[in-house]
Length: 298
Image 1 (cartoon, one colour):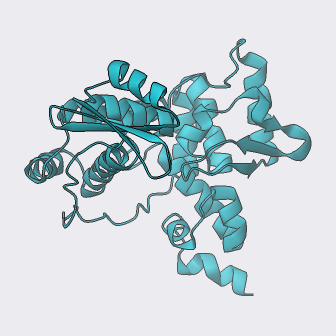
Image 2 (cartoon, rainbow, N blue to C red):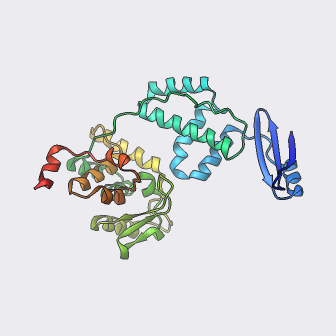
Image 3 (tube, rainbow, N blue to C red):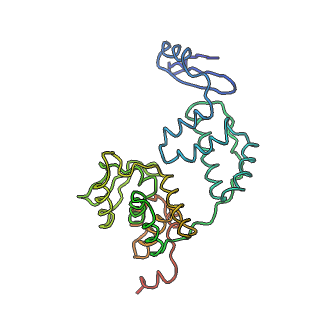
């Protein structure tokens, strides 16, 4: 059922309620409001909200959101959250279950705040699974050489670039020709994980990787033309074939940041490389020991 009312601002607000959902839109004139009331979408499903969230946030959230869509057909209740948490903790690590639930919370909040849906927000006072201890597995030179030799050429190139630049897998997967600035030794990222744009400094090895990739790629605008999850899957399969445990594609980023930290780069310099905006998050990625610091003190 659609309700139209004029606001104090003079604008016209339309609210459509159906099957427990509420859709709200505001228009400058009555004609547009009436037109929307007749033709607007009267039912906003949870899956529809998920797809709109993916469209807004981009490829980086797609894999996790699509996974949540397999478990939820409707907005979650408090009981649903407890059942889902219990189920996920049986099959994944606590940190992964926590990330899934945090993403679910953002989707529900998006539906309520951005789409005006009359949903319950069940996360108030909800106890998330504990955050796991930060990963401290750094890839060795031998492991790195073995994995690069085993990976398909495209994935090997992407992995090598991540190892040299500390770029996230999603950032690597979205590199376009136009983002590369060889004359300035840098790579432009229009939107990083935190939603901000940034530049990635390129060393000589990274520049060589990009130039070799440009020589063999087809006419696609994107250098790698692959999604982030495919990179991770190929990396995991390679580790399994080689009998290497405890590594993921993301370990390349950890290893790169740690490697540059051992060379004595400052926290602010490391933040330029990694793209972290907070020192606290960066500290989880730099795995330094006492021996790494002694040489820098002389």
